[in-house]
Amino acid sequence: MSTHFAAGPVPSAPAVNRPATLLAALVAAAVGALATIGNAIVMRTGGDDLAVEVLASALGRPPELISTMAPSSVIADVSDTLSTRGTMALLAGVGLVVFALLMRKAATWSRVLVTIFAVLTGLIAGRVATDDGSTIMIVLGILGVLGAVAAIVLTWLPANGRYAKALKN
Image 1: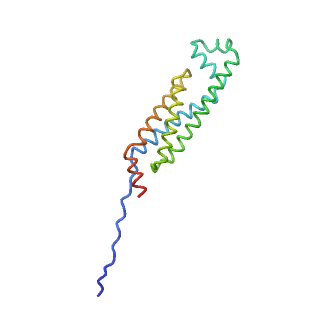
Image 2: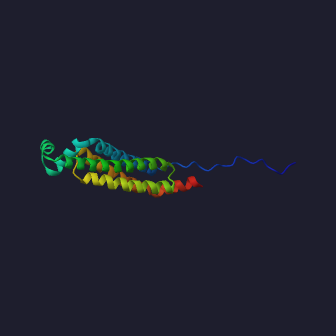
Image 3: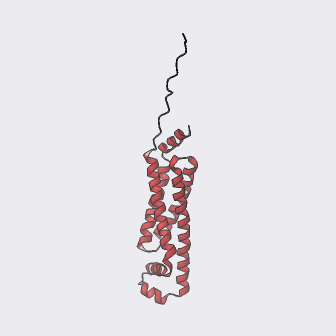
């Protein structure tokens, strides 16, 4: 008679559940990024009409008066400035979306990159929100700032670090 016993099933490690804080960080990053990308689209495609609207807002004059009285070089400069800000906002927003999507496993490198791009997004969105502009630009700027700040805070909550560590083991 054998003294060896058949091995029973080896218990597997319990499945690791993704924390709600990670999902909240992803949603916050998406909100901030999409608001900033929306602002980028508005600024890049607004052209001279948006430049006249921004000048009118800054000077407290009707847009019709600005479009007839302002030199075309001033309008072109404002339009170029808005286009440049739009490009910066687009790059920061796209970077935030990309690295937020790569943060699904809460790896430290992805959380660091989300933080970097959220800071950039927040700074650019904050500049747009606090400057003269159209109502949609200001609202999207505020959403961009709020989403970026929330993403930074939520990204570094302890539950996300524990989740990343559990996946690594």
